Amino acid sequence: MKTVIVDYKAGNVQSVLFALERLGVNATVTCDAEEIKSADKVIFPGVGEASSAMRALKAHNLDKLLPTLTQPFLGVCLGMQLLCQHSEEGDTEMLGIIPVPVKRFKIDLKVPHMGWNNLHHLKGDLFAGIQEDEYAYFVHSFYAPVTEFTIAQSSYPEPFSAALQYKNFYAVQFHTEKSGAPGAHILQNFLNL
Image (tube, rainbow, N blue to C red; front, side, top):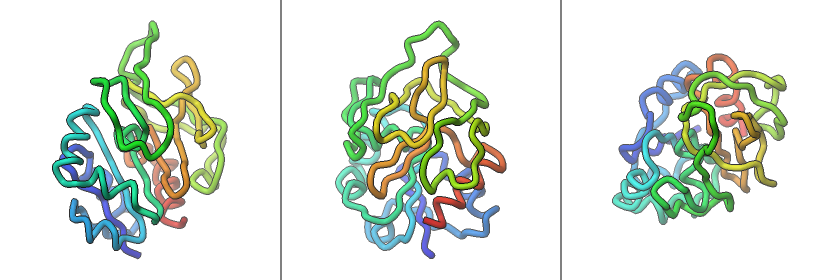
């Protein structure tokens, strides 16, 4: 099985690579279109700011390639948000793969939402074997609201999408690679799709 981590200079590539290595997977880190197209599984990590990340994707023509992929695809953190339609962060048009907006937390709690939080309303194969209210590690100031594409929720304090799925595109707001055993289990579930 060929697993590719998309490297567009805006992702937490090394920590995802190490998490996969702990699962016995040797992934290829690349922004090459042919390498990405030929992969069995694609992982799309991201950290940072939405408009900068979109500029980086466009510089590598990945904004055109990624929406055409048909293999199982996993967006992580900013990678999830980039799959959505539009972000309030910098009023940024995203990839538009998952028809969901990205909004800024407008709450009295500390932003960014940082630390361990529980997952609930789990659905689908990505969460097979994961217990309701299991904990995952989050770091984000923007979120996708709960929609028909939500396959896991968390709350801060209002519910938001901790994970989304649209066709072959899966996405998690939390960092699987920093979420201990549950995160590793979710990564393995993705690899088993």
